[in-house]
Amino acid sequence: MTDAFSLTRIALPTGVELDVATAGDPGAPGIILLHGFPESHRTWRHQIPELAKTHFVIAPDQRGFARSSKPEGVAQYKSDKTIGDMLALADHYGKDRFTLVGHDWGGAIAWAAALNHPDRIERLIILNAPHPLIFQRTLFDDPDQRAASQYITAFRDPNLEAHIASIGVEAYFGKTFVGHADPAVMAVEKPIYLDQWTQPGALTGMFNWYRASSLIIPAIGEAPPRPAYLDAPFAPLKMPVLVIWGLRDTALRPSQLEGLELLVPDLTLVETDAGHFVTWEAPEHVNAAMRAFLA
Image (cartoon, rainbow, N blue to C red; front, side):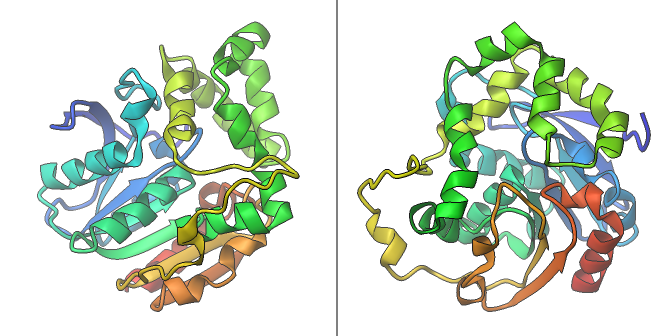
């Protein structure tokens, strides 16, 4: 394993224990990094050393992932629970206000936290994670995004874990990343993913993030009732926001960036030639964008 980070096990008042990587001066400004599916703190392996030069970096393995707690029941993975973990972690390290960074599901939590707890979040950095209003709206209005998101319905299938058990986690790993990432990079990281995914309850924990979400995924050709909030006024974010977007993302289509400036008035958008896993597909570009934004 390269770029290994020592982890500290932290019991939070939210009832879970998270493994957390930290780096930098604890007295420096705080920056919390939230990974997504199907990863861990290692999503940030190229960013942690760079950010630690100027910040105290806090990068947890979120609930349900790797060796962090995996509470039973889908309701334990609703956004109020995962946001609560993040805020409790900030409290643990004495960070009242901080920069919040999120990729994929970590980005979804970061958007939601910024909308609901703007007093805690000084700056927001999002990497290939859609704004919640735009994402739900495009699932109704953009056939391309709707088609690209049908996998979420598959992840919500309660029989999925039995299917994976029947074919083997390693076979499922190959299927999961086909077309989504550089095979050479994946070959190095594969043993780490397999170790994390085969922890007791890990697959269910990861998929429960999708099962707990209130996101509506219409089937192709379906015309379900349209939520009224999609066409109602939506509060803009007031803090500075950096969005870094890998343009070759096959799961999140370009429509996720359309109209974003209306919801994020203080927006810096950096597009890069990478796929969904932009943090380790284009680490130098990501680090440079973060450095400029945080300067």
